[in-house]
Amino acid sequence: MAHFAKLDTSNKVLSVEAVDNINLLDDNNIEQEEIGIQYLITHTGWSSWKKTSFNTFGGKHYNPDGGLSDDQTKAFRKNYAAVGMYYDQDRDAFIMAQPHSSWTLNEETCLWDPPVERPEVTADSEGNTYLLEWDDINVRWLGRIDANEYEWNPTTQEWVLL
Image: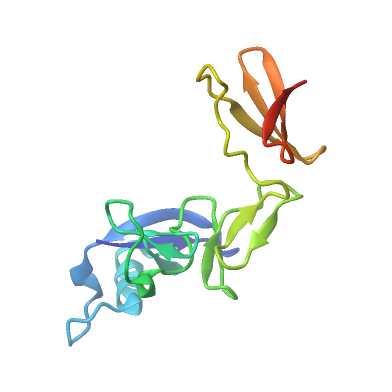
């Protein structure tokens, strides 16, 4: 199956539809995006579609088992499209809306990077998992366990009770 993103006039993804690969084949049995788009236009009446790759994330192609593919030429449009994402024609990529004003777009992955790296420590010494939240006003990561709130200290790589 091939997947296509249905786009509105601002290139926002409205839905993602699956199309049987047979509906993309040219006379030489080679898949062609444009043939799939014409198929969708004919069958839905909607005119704006872009093919997307289910196995592409962050500019990398992954095997169905989740492992990194040996053939990175299969990476397509940086990220698999999802409702609410945007298609950026200049980058030929599907990109999520900017989650926070302080985050910047990574041009290689077309994912948004926080100014402070996401903590790798996600549980306390007792195994309780921190519920992570980005604090854009103070440009920091917060973590909650029960009623306790913690701040991530990127220098010491530790959670500090607030």
